[in-house]
Image (cartoon, rainbow, N blue to C red; front, side, top):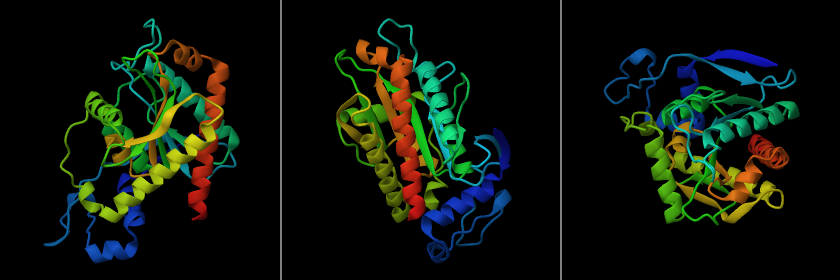
Length: 288
């Protein structure tokens, strides 16, 4: 069963900011949120928020009111992403297939509701992807990708979480490439200006916690690379405003990984691991 609901972006944005900073902090900082472009006063801030937008929520009949998880299939449209060894498999298609299978698994389990940044072959900029999570006040944001490397022996899945400092040069290079290739342009920083350092650190800790659960649930079920949890300054994760990870399911530049990622049996095991980690992470944060 699919529900289509229009969420007011202004209310969702204000609720997320209040939740991140705490009501007391909001009052202490005297942050004025003025819908419609009004002025908040001499010491306030005027914030331009997007108009209300409708999003499709996928959920079973018993899941009404449960937390929303946003799945973000990477690339799309004119951007194919990585290519397989023979050039036949495109990352944009495999990431979408994986996202749909994961969506269906989560809906069947009934512990969360699910939204997707794209459900077909279209290109979206980073801010368009992250905006879905912000509009819906998402409990989690999971961006799904497949990797590629010059070394044909490189293989295994990697989980990236948000950090201002990269874990290694490879993670930094990946963040730079994705931030550039997905059409990101510099913003005026008005939304970021509302976030305290404490709130951003909390988002990073929550993202690292989700990444840790993903690695834990995946170990022994799927092929992982050495030191599978890495981190860097991924724009789409930062802008999602929620615990967020970027999951690279394997290397399309490696023939063995490509065979696994196109195998229904392997993808089923991968989906089970991802779903278990996402559900466990949402449940743990609900318990506080």
